[in-house]
Length: 512
Image (cartoon, rainbow, N blue to C red):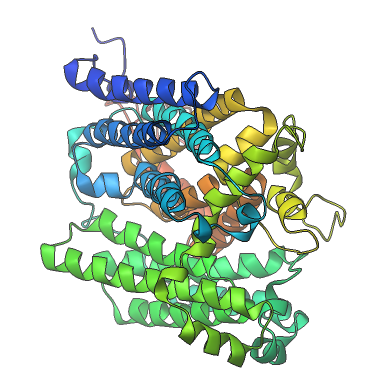
């Protein structure tokens, strides 16, 4: 007699054999070496120590990747739409590529670090602290993710979501537009967009309604895409085009590139979940991703110039800027992290968990609580960019370190990794082929934000995104409580001879 349900057996990892022990040992070894470097048990001032710190980061990422691949039904496609893939890409750029660049070209550092100055020991210690977080995150992620069954590698192209409602989609797009336009007008409208784009994105407080509307537009587009991938219709294609146009217009008018970029990446995840791309499609997708990434980097550089120049002058400066300089603003997260570890705890005291208390507080709309905290990104700006109202990211490891040191990095990263592992298991093991995968795709893309920006700010942004996406999907998919209840009843299997059809009768059944 089987005492443990089959569903629970799939969640329990298999017995650790040699194939499981080797990656686990790699993660543990990377964490130990990084911890010894971060705490000064191994001298940090030599080039060999810097190379050892970078090597530990590489070992931690690769070892976690090998284990994650085996647990993701050995499917590169599923691994690519898991939180680990985004985490690995983020860490390799921030904690391998960027430190090596600063080691060989110190003059490429951001202003926040250039004014403080830095030595090889500062780079080594920062990379080592990041390595502690990476190893702890990897351990937590593997525990939370578990092991997917082999059948999970199959595509879900045959699954059919609810029919697309053209009327509901149109209403959602209209309401979403009516929500973000008032913020655009409040920030100066077309005149500000032409003469001073930076003024539009400055002080966008008390504007939660606008970002809910923005994500309503994005949600309609994502649902239309999911519908097209399974049952292409002319109406769905029209809705997708309309939502894409409105999404681009909203991103340009509000000067926010993040939501648009996240939506595009979420669409890629939805496509890969439904279909297995051919080599030609994969090559085209990579080329498109590189082009889109370059465009986003150009937008970031343009935003930096538009802070102190008009739109015309900013475009002129952008044309004269070499492409290699576009990435400085995005890579400066590591520079800011190095600056923080230099200042804390010598010049600036630990936060002692204060930024964690801001996570629920930042969920309150500023219109209801005008004095609520601005978030950790703005607090660090007050130290490294005094007088400039801008958010300065310092990475997940930077926030955890500022709250209490290396041990907080280890514990906090372990918890975050566990939560992201559980998210990956839900999305790739249960939500596939359903409306819930759209929500998973959005949460998946926020992995990068959680690993680079402050936890409180990103949690607030994610909640607004999920609210907007949920409203849009409910409108576009003809969702109703009655239909949801009927769907739940259809998943109940009634034992033979035990079904009672009398009104109000109590019947026992088992859920599939």
